[in-house]
Amino acid sequence: MLKDCPLWPKEFQELYRKEGCWRGETFGEMLEKRANSYGDCVALTCGARNVSYAELDKRVNELVSGFLAIGLKKNDRVVIQLPNIIEFFEVCFALFKIGALPVFALPTHRSSEINYFCQFAEATAYVIADKHAGFDYRSLARQAKQSAPSLKHVIVVGDSQEFVNLSTLYRKPIQKKLEVSPSDIAFLQLSGGSTGLSKLIPRTHDDYIYSLRTSNEVCGMNEKSVYLCALPVAHNFPLSSPGVLGTLYAGGRVVLSPGPSPDQAFPLIEKERVTITALVPPLALVWLEAKSSRHYDFSSLRVMQVGGAKLSAEVARRIKPTFDCLLQQVFGMAEGLVNYTRLDDDEETIIFTQGKPMSPYDEIRVVDDNDEDIGIGKVGHLLTRGPYTIRGYYKAEEHNAKAFTTDGFYRTGDLVSVDSKGYLTVEGRDKDQINRGGEKVAAEEVENHLLAHADIHDVAIVAMPDQYLGERSCAFVIRRPHSTIASNELKSFLKKRGLATFKIPDRIEFVEEFPYTPLGKVSKNKLRQQIADQLMKTVN
Ligand code: J2J
Image 1 (cartoon, rainbow, N blue to C red):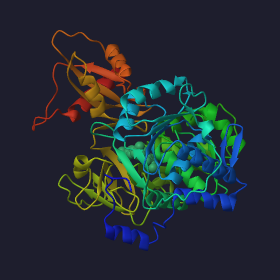
Image 2: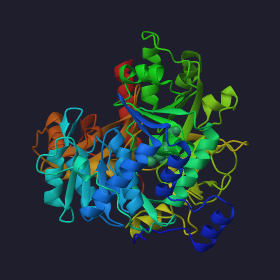
Image 3: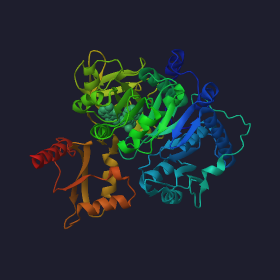
């Protein structure tokens, strides 16, 4: 078992097993069982390539052999940064079978994030595509090798240059007993982060597979389901709610789209007869706008899920009439808890709420600033615990003491209200994070990068309203005396430091001083108000 991962106390483990939530299955066994039951059925479609369950399992076993041959072993951490391609699944399942742990990076991450993941997780391997969307990932690998002494292998899909080519690792399967337990950590998922750098989220086979099975029930997934993965596959939403892994659990078919644009996704919906897909709110808006001018057959589509950020009621209302399918709102988090509106909920519930917890074993508390429970309909902090919500981040003892209550509830950082039927509405956030249309930016992480600039005295980053993304980021900056540094110079400074583009502040406001709270902290509330007022004035 990987060290430094707080797990459920014994009595909860027993409860979740006794209640049949955790059924003692691993991802490796899950794939083998599906290969037995659905061998000839297509598991994955990517471009012209169709891979059956039997082939997937065979390729995975070959890769297990190759991974073992280069020395990968149980509990090794492997940073994976791949686009939506079949190899993502082959690599993940091969690692699951060995008991090595994928660490899921996003294709938009750059050297700042990748170096940190490799260092912090003490990764032994890093798996990339050669190039994707015009970016050469081998340059990231070179930097990662310099910065993380633990990194022994860089494995590349495509032109590998000085690194190992993934295609050379599909070797004759060997008969070796691999000891992987369902209660082992299967992988490390990334948190959106609020304080400093992203935390790593340890998820077990047992808990994650339970979340897939429950998601499948709620979303009506079965072997006829065809799931279009338009969002980046490693993100927790398309990975598991029910996403690509839920679809494979159900014996359905995953269709991989290289990207989420209507030009990429619409033809796939028609051609592959897609039944369900998942979007973040800004994309739902783009799809709504694009639908009338593009004449594709959407008649197979039953469910359009939208989540990751708050969906406005105006946009929600347009989904069903435009696509002639059900809308499902999804409010989830990589730490665990996932809420869904149900497919048979009434219109009002689907349009105005973010759903209710998927499992009867999810415990929800809405509390005031003193952790006292508050009543129905009132806005408070959402706390949760349950059979698929973590009890602590990986190697983060100090942070865990703040992010979890002493009795194990995770402090989500979300402000919600709950109605009499148990449905949640997301009303805001008390974590220091900007939600840029589903992409999470931890203010402190970007502030620390800016503070490294010699011309900057102080900085505070807040969310500002945005019609399209819901929120964008605005950095308030106090320059050092006599400095005349401009916004574009600061933005290129951040880019050079290797920060993912979505984290670079959309706007920089130079100020002489910050407003303070009575307790002497920078008042981010006032700064948010200030920029919102300013934007209102420019609109009017
Ligand atoms: C408002 N805020 C939302 C929603 C997430 C399914 C769906 C989403 C995620 C995800 C996920 C929201 N309305 N509908 O992992 O399995 C914000 C909240 C939450 C944070 C989690 C899944 N859906 N959010 O988005 O770990 O603030 O997971 O705490 O990326 O996104 O972000 P993340």
